[in-house]
Length: 429
Image 1: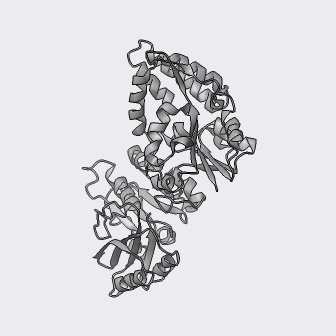
Image 2: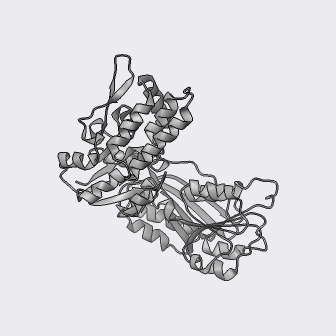
Image 3: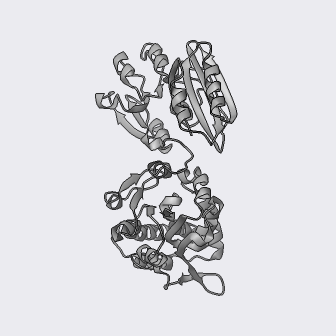
């Protein structure tokens, strides 16, 4: 059996829990801003390996002035701050409830209520515990717990002696120490929320999302291909908010003045400012390009016939001056995330419902008779249960979206790609 050791602060959640607890417990303290800064400083020193974990922990606890009521409020905050890529991968934890462990220098009092809805067993949460006085005020922590010590995660794993390969994922120095000790097979530096260079430079693999971790290890996941592996190139005069939207969604962003040759073969998403004209040659050779956004009227700037031939979904906006700069990037993200082609310039307008526990298959083809018959014949031959199916056409383009049961043979995907008149086929999730 493989085991998965997962950190909590800035990994499972987007934030450092003790930092958030300080903002709750010290909300009315006159020197709260200075105390917040000091707590954050102690956190970062420990995470970067510049201060022992025990010294950092003791220093932060002294500054908190927190109690049980504050912890209840903290749990409510943390439940809303679960990292998006963990949030969408509950199914992994359900299938690996015995082998997924939370190992953290944080505290069980707030970790267990946050991770329990994700099928993570309480006995698989290894963390510190607070000590309280009779009035419920936090007075300190159990100093006999190995996780309160420097190198605590290493000491804990030595005690556990897990019978199998161990994979670690986290953002801090204490997580890297597991790799350094030789106790784990591979260490994955988690950078969705924060990247600590002192940690990521030493990692076996940098994982910008939990999707990436699951993909690399061929584990069950909510999306078939991690968004951080989709190169999104932004060219020309494009407002920062557009880049921010796509980066926040998890895409790998590059911002350039021109469409540089080195990006042509790898670009998956292309967002162009209204001052950019895209050459036919570049568009023809952009074989991985899935969607193209143009902040303005693309009529004389982008060859729509080539987009159709290559199955590239084009979004533009004749009313760009009247709309905000979020319109096109959001349309592009919706296509990658759900398969939506709403308001596309060259594809039929299709808005799709979100589905769970299913795979969504996108089949773009020439609009000729018989394609859907071939698609459905393959589903029948492979005994595939179709949950929902959508087909729309526009001019020369046919766009078929099929939601199928999660159980299918991979040979089906190859067969769907080989159907006559197929332009592009993609597994969405």
